[in-house]
Image (tube, rainbow, N blue to C red; front, side, top):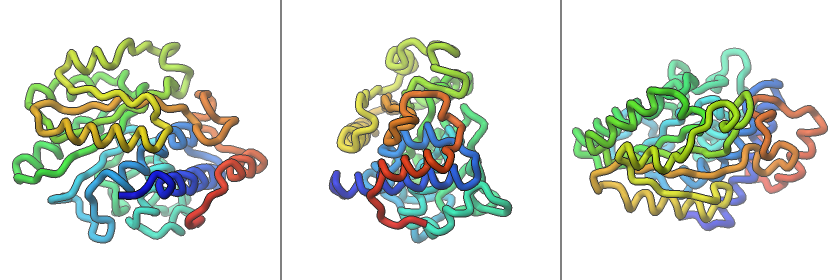
Length: 282
């Protein structure tokens, strides 16, 4: 297991990658990517049992992760690269012609680490439940993880899947909702208030864990550890993780305006200055 200091170094590097990737093509989604950096780093560098050097789609005897809110691909690609799924230098091809690193993850490019195409919101939970059930049929004790945006929960398919997971006792899945309170057109409260997500998921039969500090690496690793302890007890597990959109770059924090806007040259320089610790820049 990695130390908090080691994980924080990876977090700094991943944030550098995010802003550089989006700046390089003047397109992409930095806000949500920055807000979920601690989660993805914790998952891949501390929590999951996975094999970057021998990637397979079936992932037998491995934990798997499905990114449902696929627009935050910059953080996903950076974490996959630094985990060893593909060369870090490939991050420089993000959203460029003939790249394997599309704006939303896809499978036909055969990018190691990506098991579903994601971008059409609301579908990732259904896919993850199917994967979790397959693991049960194969006597595979591994865990399936998913990440969702809070705005994504406005999609009806999420709740059909949530109902199914509890009804069928899919207790080898740990889903996380990124509760940054922002979506492309404004705050979630302005667009479509979600009410109490804890009450909703509990009503749907899920075991719910709160992570109040989703941008604190120790809090995130702790929440994931607790969630893992709750698996295998007859209920699917949900982590409600409060984050700040744009976290780690002060002028991006807390605003939906950075959902899908690239920084200019001066803003990039400032963002990199605020995240100066590097492991391997591409």
